[in-house]
Length: 336
Image 1 (cartoon, rainbow, N blue to C red):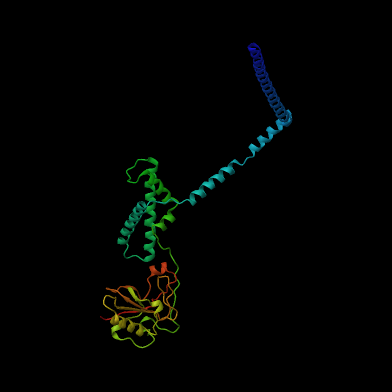
Image 2: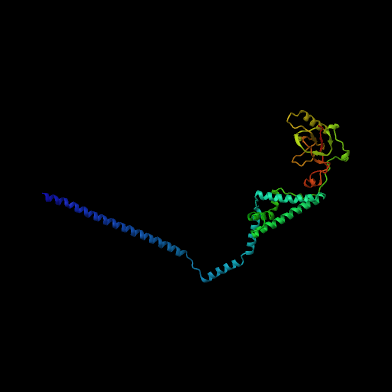
């Protein structure tokens, strides 16, 4: 009985081993089939790509190749080389003009000091010459300085070693600034020399009015303490803004100054200068405002100083072409 039971149990184990071998064999066969299928698909795709590439490939005949080469040679011969060079040169010039060299502040200050020193030496030697001649000499002095400075910095740039105290990098900037950007640099440092202006005399007085000495102010007469001065403009700190302060006459303006001085509190500035506009056409001033008839300015100055007297000088009218010949204001320094 024992042997029979053992044989019965042995047979299933043998079938199990056999089934494992069969399963392994089937898996191997399946892998081989998949690999063969993948290789076949890859080969087919390569064949299709090579076939399409062969269809797009064009074979040119020798005469066609020769004609294409001749066309390339013709294009090279007729290529506007000089014109292209000229265009590139113009582009470089325009781009260089548009870019302005920004000098450091210490270089600008150095230029200002040197120019002022030259102009100061000139003013000491030209005290008795006319205004127009002095302006021409100032322009000549500045231009001579610019040329000398330009030569100095160019030597520094070329030689790279010089007795000059200007470093090489700053010298390169100065060459550009003094050569092509001089107009911009002059404006930045405040160097302005007026050009000659053909002045046209303006007459602010109505017809029939006599010359300066015989002119009579309209309105009531002014008392002696007003110290009236015709065609005179005094400077000073405004204690009453004239643009919004009108008076009917110069005498009223003077009395307004005297009254302000009496009513001023401790620590406030007391009026000691009055300036009045008697002209119906308004009065000229170098500021930005339009000064109208009957403006009354009340001012204070520890030491009153004249702005203009009788006539505007020629140098002032050259720089202010709209200025009249005669000073239209009436002023006075009141008695203490």
